[in-house]
Length: 166
Ligand SMILES: Nc1ncnc2c1ncn2[C@@H]1O[C@H](COP(=O)(O)OP(=O)(O)OP(=O)(O)O)[C@@H](O)[C@H]1O
Ligand SMILES: [Mg+2]
Image (cartoon, rainbow, N blue to C red; front, side, top):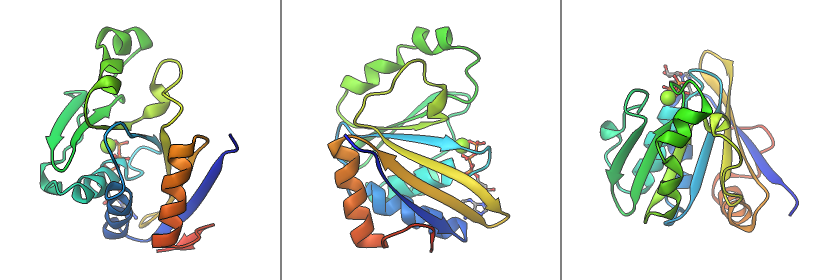
C-alpha cells in the first residue's frame, strides 16, 4: 500500500498534547503508535495527549524509561513502552515485549526505531522533530489501511497539514 503522511508544527507543549489527544480519541484496541525522533522531541508529552483521548488523567503518564512498560486503564488499556534504555536487541526479545501485541488494548512505543525487526504493519508512525525551543514538527505516516484511516480522520479534524502551524 502507498505510504500516506501528514505533517504539523506545534508551537507549544499544550498544542502537542492536543494533537496527541486528537489521535487518542480515534484509537481502538489493537492500534500501535510508534513514536520516533529527537531526544526531548515531545514523545512523552504527546503520549499524555493520547491518554487524555482515552479519558486517562495525563498526570498519571510518566516516561517508562526505567520500568520499560507502564500500563494505564481508561476507555482502553494503554501499554506505554520506552525502548530508550535498552542496550541491545536481545534485551528487547528477553522481555517478550511482542506479547503486548496480542493483548486487549493499545500500544504506544517511544524510540520505536529501536525495536528489533519489524513492528506490525498496521502501526501508525509518529515522528517528532525539534525545530526550535518551542516548535516541534510532528509527522504521522503509515502504509496500511489502519494508519491511512487515522490520517484521513486527523486531516478532517486538524487540517490538511503539510507543515501547517498549530
Ligand atoms: N511544541 C512542543 N511540544 C512538546 N514539547 C515541547 C514543545 N516545545 C518545547 N517542548 C519541551 O520539550 C520537552 C519534551 O519532553 P518529552 O519528555 O515529551 O520528550 P521525549 O521525546 O519524550 O524525550 P525522551 O527522548 O527523553 O523520551 C519538554 O521539556 C517540553 O517542555
Ligand atoms: Mg520520553
